[in-house]
Length: 209
Length: 209
DNA sequence: GTATGTGAAGTTATTCACAGCG
DNA sequence: CGCTGTGAATAACTTCACATAC
Image (cartoon, rainbow over all chains, first blue to last red; front, side, top):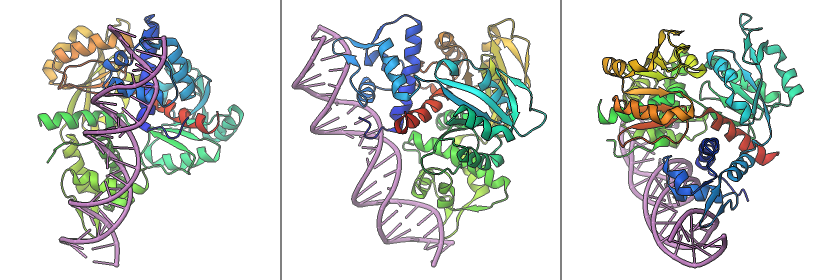
């Protein structure tokens, strides 16, 4: 199977899963590639090709079973199990992430938050209490967390990334600076909300400056 | 100039800008394409090619002037001016966005927030007071906002998107369901934090399930 | 009839490699 | 001499179009 999966395909798999969750909530039990594609910005062939990278999930003449496909996508993305995740930095964004319930039901358990600021340590964010950074390694060890969310100021990011990697973290969701160097085998996904806004204004400026 | 710009290039421009902001804060005045590329995950040729799409910003044998390039990128992305932005939904995420100071200095003025929940109306989030949805059209009209952030539950998203478009919004940063239909000419950028985590676990599952 | 899965074709984006310039 | 800017080559991704299965 997995010869090599294009990154855009992986991102679309998440979009399919999100949309299937909505369909499931609305008790829709079947969906065709064109229905799934229509509401998003890609073609039906792209949907079929993406899924075909991992196997055969549809029935010809019918389409895809919503629940079956949700299960298949979770298996592909690895989220049928629950992943322990640590959050570094206890700012506003971390606050929002820790209070969001959607992660748990999608396979992510944000079970600890850390900060260097004594002012923030001890605060309750959602279900977790902010801990001092000193505890980081012990918590990662104890929980077996392989994924971390890095939401700290740019100047602190690289040192903390190094520390996380040293502690065994292999996947890093990075809300800090885009320049983050990690050893091979460590995966980094860079999230930048400003970049999304800039994408919009880029296009808006093209048409009317 | 702008024949057609690849979407991946637009996203990278934002990444360059973020990194240049860091360099500027550290009083670095020059940077070469390879230095800029090294810290991120793309090659030097990609950096040069992306910039060359818009003009000639570097000096051969020297590299790019950090401040000049920041200015050029802002001009390209349209963020030398300030953009009024309205936020729809006053949940935790909106809370975090409205309290984040980085937007203002990057050209985005989150100047109003709306919710349908009477419980939330009147609350102070950062600099803005949550307003009832009824005010939406008037505020968009008054402020001239062309960009909106949609952070509401999936089932409410499409109706609100329609309403925003009717009120004159042309750029939509969408934190809700990926299935959002908008008329041509309206740009949608879909942000999904769960998708970033899934990207990580996808790769982690490949190597060690 | 209808919708999948997939070779083949087409399109788009990245990388190479070097001429050109400071 | 170093680094940009860019044609040319390569690689990656998407779309077409249809045989195949239900």
